[in-house]
Image (cartoon, rainbow, N blue to C red; front, side, top):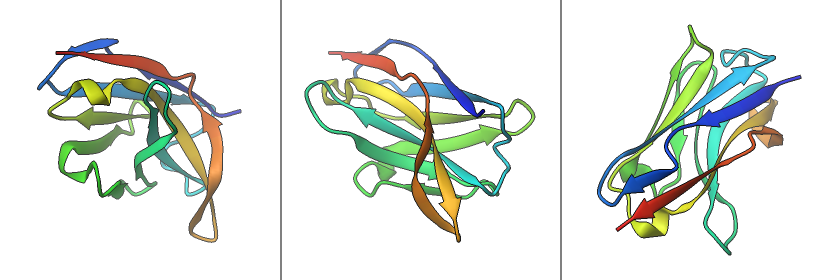
Length: 123
């Protein structure tokens, strides 16, 4: 069973860069069965897809966040990471790492979720 666990700071200051890591167990991040990504949910709002990294290290980002977002991976530790630059109070949210199931080369929904981590941005 694939499990994901987020780690990182719960509080960042405005203008700083957020760095979160997702450690994956029960499966390899180099598998073609999943794409690994980040989703966030601000308080009282809906889910927002941020981006994904595929088995070959290729990435795809939300257009609205692309200029501030980087997703990378460490295959030796079976984990992937999110960096979100120039944090602002509106970036306060619960951040989830997720595994998107890949069928026929296309995303086919989220198969596994991390528990989520609340990140608060202080102004």
